[in-house]
Image (cartoon, rainbow, N blue to C red; front, top):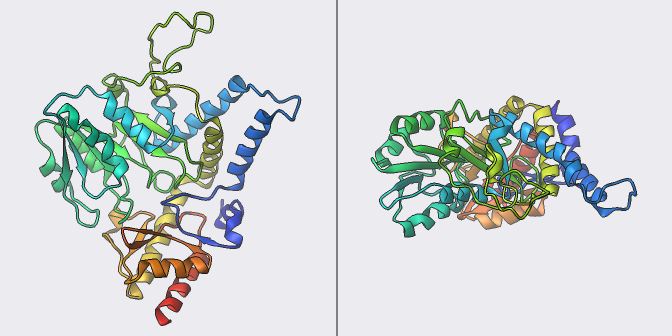
Length: 380
């Protein structure tokens, strides 16, 4: 699938330049059509459509998990739906049997989603140790120096929300295996833009919401849990964490599924699943390798051009740690943001820095629009 075909799936490209996929992404035609079709069925206007479509929708749920598993490099039995990244991380944080004196390592400066679920364990005597970072970047040695003999978990952001620093998941996975530490990844700023193989990287637990680079909807995401770790987690409970015996619903037998379905507590966001199904379908049709190549090419080109204009990149420019996020530090970030917005260009201001996040359907004309607007701002 070429870029022009991809762009045709996103009608906003006809009238605006959207470079804010690190916040929330636009929906493609296939995603909207999937949502509309689901809502129309539940609406009941079609006499042939099942309003109570729980059973009819199950194949879509199954295929969505298969698509997510393909993207993650694992089996669908290792994947389950969650409402968002925070919910996924809380499955891990609340599921392990913590003891006073246990420690968790987290790089400092990451988005709060990857901090608060673990800080909440301090009441149980768990300590959170922060890996020192510089503009979101850190080395393997920094991580190893933070680990202690009683560190049980390392949780990292695959991509730093502000600097765009991409963690070396394979190296971190090997380090965690060496030190017998559970390896967790908050993948929301990478999944759908960059390629990952959770099994090859030695990741024990990964979770991500679907509304950013996956370009699905808010309120739906996925988690991955390694089979060995699954046995160490106490799952949350609802009425769908295990097999449902419809003829004996009041027997109350607490039995869990033998795969990642055990982390499902109740009725899912089916509209969100429909959106995710379509979004993953488009992503896989385009090709994850092509998508990653375009994301990295566009972000690198944008960073270089902005640097030439006196706006150096916040964070490392090492290609090994590059992602789709480009952040700069202009003297007046809010004013430049508003200047861009007036010209139909959407970025974001975070921590008084200006962040751009192009994805694979963006093209060189989008970058040119940004650079022309920046030039006009600088000359005004």
